[in-house]
Amino acid sequence: MKRRTFLSGAPVLAAASPAQSAQRSPSPLPLKQLREQYRYDLFEDFLPFMDKYVIDPQYGGFMCNTDRDGTNLSHRKETWFEGRGIWVYSFLYNHFGRNGHYLEVARKSLQFILGAKPEDKDTLWPASFTREGKRLTPPATAIYGDLFIAEGLTEYARAAGERKYWDLAKELVLKCAALYDQPDYEPDIVSSYNGPAPVRFPGARIQGVSMVLIRVIGQMLEQDSNRELQRILERSVDAVMNQHYNAAFDLNNELLEHDYSRPTNELAQFVYTGHSIETLWMIASEAVRTRNKNLFDLATHRFRRHVEVARDDVYGGVFRSLNHVDRNQWALDKVLWAQEEVLIGSLLVHEHTGAPWGTEMFSKMYSDVRAKYPLRPHGYSLWITNADRKVTFEAHATRVENYHHPRHLMLNLLSLDRMIARGGKPSGLFAA
Image (cartoon, rainbow, N blue to C red; front, top):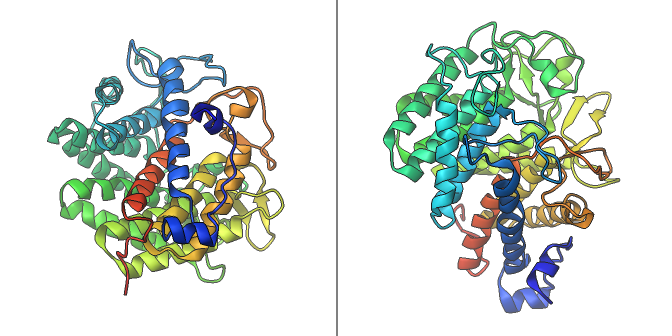
């Protein structure tokens, strides 16, 4: 059987039998088979499509407004997707062979986005640009775009060996943290979730902001220590673990008042499970970096709780948004990124502890995702990004997802490599 024929299908993960596991490795997961599939998904499916249709060789950057067949629906470029793309291609360069093409893609996107850098140090990048880099929108009011640029700069600084980009990332993070602390920050945040009834909520404390700060700063501190950044990171972790956490639900509220008190309206019932799952694996990963067993245990315990609550026991996968806890009102769409956050977090648990629940969660989600999301059975590259509850195939799409999907593939590939190198044994990092 040819490798391409096998891998381009939709295999369902079958864990090794006890006898096979005893012969091959301590891990019940078929690690080498998984690694082969993940490598196919990244290097033979995702990256060739990006090269052919999404990366702009003339002006740099990413034209993500692209259909399944590669048709560019527009040449518009987005700040979010530039920052994220810089990170992806810099990470590829740093961890997967130091291919000069990856670094050049990141460099040209960086050149594109820095060409539109706001002159005022307190102003945010606009959300979108023409292909050539002309601004299409006024400066953003939410800090996410600048934070994604900071993440890209951080990884590019490592790839290029140029400290100035780390320094610029620090400037952006400090600017964003200061803007986030303003009592009138982003009053229309509720409408961005496409979940609860949109009401104005100026100065909200937003779990999603803490999430991105944790991820960006953790990567920055891998390269260099910094007290200012460390304080913001610690505050963000505390916000997620102690302020957003609602003991009455054993779940995290997405939005709080500016003073971190719980809202007095129905937003007190809003749990954005997708962000909670994503944030908690990031905190667990940060606990791995800092060797903090107590934090790892608590973060993974709550990660498990959110996944179990969000799971669709009828059609599989997880829902992204619990709009009202007491009424059990969910947004019933399925988004790929939420499923992939489960795959990252559960494999992280399996790698470091070997806990059966992590192994089972990964196996179940992997089988669900592999059966429904890859587009190869429909004649296309990539995976379905947004869908209805049943993940019904649609012939057209308006966006290529250039961040969550490759991040999932890369992080889990590295995890699989480490486990295979250890003969399938857990890392033992937090062993008693």
